[in-house]
Length: 266
Length: 266
DNA sequence: CTTAAACGTTTGCATATATCAAACGGGTTT
DNA sequence: AAACCCGTTTGATATATGCAAACGTTTAAG
Image 1 (cartoon, rainbow over the protein chains, first blue to last red):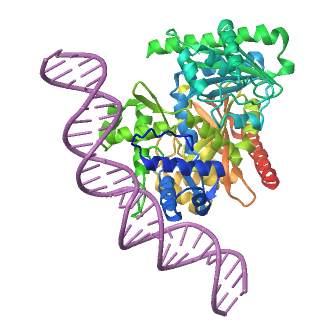
Image 2 (image 1 turned 180 degrees about the horizontal axis):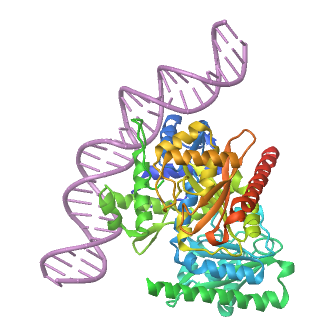
Image 3 (image 1 turned 90 degrees about the vertical axis):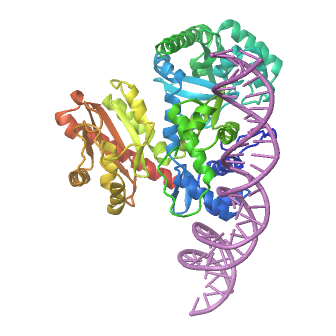
């Protein structure tokens, strides 16, 4: 979406979709742009881009003011719809609020898509402070290997799904503590599977620790994960290795129950 | 976006964009669908729709599982980006949190786009309870005439912008209290302009009242609005007509200051 | 005050490409 | 085994897209 790597396996595709995606990607990257600015970044002539921009504007994908185009606020309403149609969000957001309140820290509800992690919901407890960096993190699907919720999911996928994800991405280092060795990661995941929870010891953001637990359904498939994150100074010793994991797993379990009852009701 | 009314004024457009929009609209409406289901709702043959779906999937707009297509979770990350690039959101979300905390109720930060209202941020105070209906409201841009924030913006637009918006939409009734008469609405807006705040007395949702104030910048243009909403039982008398309006206007003013300083810093 | 440059916009024409039928192959049902 | 439904592919065709070039404005330069 908006400039992701595409693989045309010789199969027939609609080229215009790719062109639209390219244009939206440019506008997203520039944040805002005039016709000429956008046309320079795309492999199409000014006249053609103009027709695209006119149509995208008319369809509500773009706003235009004094010749400057931006992504429309309607993406926010679409996202709201997508979220509300995601059963994990509906089953989990109250529990995540509860988790944030009980711990006083950040709590997250995440799902996996295409091997990456998308944040469905975030709740802030009393002591959690919002940072710009945090906001930016949610603008892009994240890798799974460098955070607690991601590891919790990765550990509990069935083997070939895990293999498929691991082989398509190299383990980029986010901090000094990020696990970048595949064998080491697989060992860690083994432990995560045994424990039922995953830890993140400053592997994503320096100074931040986190605890995550997977959200499963009876047939074993993984719906997502919950996590709680806090500054290392407030998350250490027994609290980090036992008390918080218990609470996070309890939250995950409550969400699992919600998911099942919701499924039963239809 | 996703099936909005389009006006092709004879100008040339990219037809594929409209087709993509149609397809995404169908999927949004069905929530999920198979190729055949989607093709039935669109004026294209199964084979053609198949090519579109493959491309949209490949570009990350759709997910596919066992032949069932859905809108991708990546719309959530895009929305996050759009929000974070909106200066009003960056300048206002902390203040809206503060407003929710001080009043213990719902607080909203909204902006206008194409004559409709989009919620940029919502914060819940101690007493505010989340309802499904509330969630659904944010899935579609709302009319301006039946809620406090919308009236606050509408009242303070310059006359021709207000006229342009009012003439393109009829004043649909949402409850018995919704103002559906244009003359009456214009009178109310006059009062809103004089007072500096707008009231909503069960005009959007039965049993809910709200207070909204516009967010302006020095040159007079309207950036958006803030509002606080609560059950009528908790928002009446002096609190409804004076105390809360003061707090809401104060919040709006703080956001205005944030916007200016942010602008100055670049 | 004239000229040049830059920008968004439109248009004719050539061609790439989106679309339709029709057929294929795998499942499931009859 | 026949009939059916599904997703998928393919060749042929119409047409929508894309280029180049020109136009009308506005802004900058000489």
